[in-house]
Length: 132
Image 1: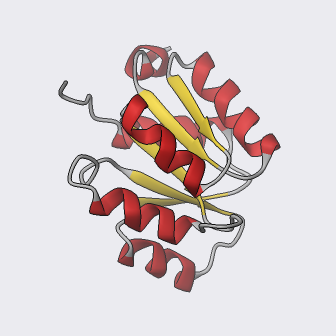
Image 2: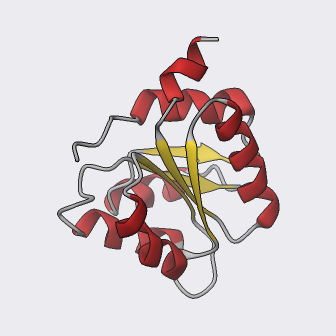
């Protein structure tokens, strides 16, 4: 499979308060050769992002404490991560949600529940190797 070679060594952070979504994404991504970092919410993600330096970040919109829009904006404001692709995850597929995601700097919008193919294709499209 070409996806496996494409995602080998790519670090993906998945920020979602749903254990089911985190586990599904982790299984799909690891099968494709990606390194996966999981975070339960925005604060958890911000605490881990500097240590792991992901190539791509998936961020749920509806989360407690710090929502996905706030989390995305904080990631993008950090010069170290300003070019890191952030893909918003949401069960809502409205134009307003997509527009609001773009306003805070998200690169794409993936509707939940996602398929393995759509998740891997999104990573393959956005993942760029990070310069050390």
